[in-house]
Length: 115
Length: 114
Image (tube, rainbow over all chains, first blue to last red; front, side, top):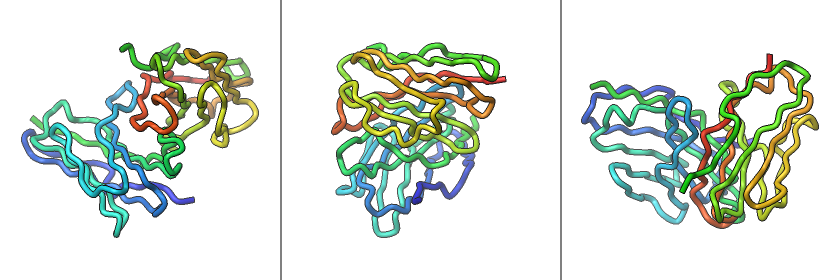
């Protein structure tokens, strides 16, 4: 079946730099996308989401970009801090609004921020 | 808000034993989800409930797995008999209802089957 995948499994940045984490999806029917952050020993923590009728959404220090033409999703973190070090997952929903919690997750990208 | 509460945090058992994982969703949330996380397969949906009713259990690996939601504030995931390949982190998550976004996760149960 179709699945969400990530281009890079690891990303290392210096504190203060901007980070960009990428995600490719293959199901054109997906209409909702979400990014999670997972720290060691914890559950996935919601960061930001976006619906397919949008191409950009901003939160606090984070921006999600959606390019439906090439089926690409990215998470941008501004002024990355050591506390941002974690595994980041993208996820897609294909339930067409009937159940937004039914998600297909990508493999994850490990972000390491060096002081 | 206390968030999604799972117990136990860690469970170590021997092959063949019954294991029961517990979850309390966020108060007022009507949709509950069980996910499993392994290194090999990542995060996978096992089953979800809307208003205490199981809607989709296609992710449940086999008959050894069962899940119940007797009321709006409690759900269990049972494995009987357990096998070493069931070792994983099991997460419970909830949303306000089926048509609301922002799935919120608990801290998970780390299960080790020896």
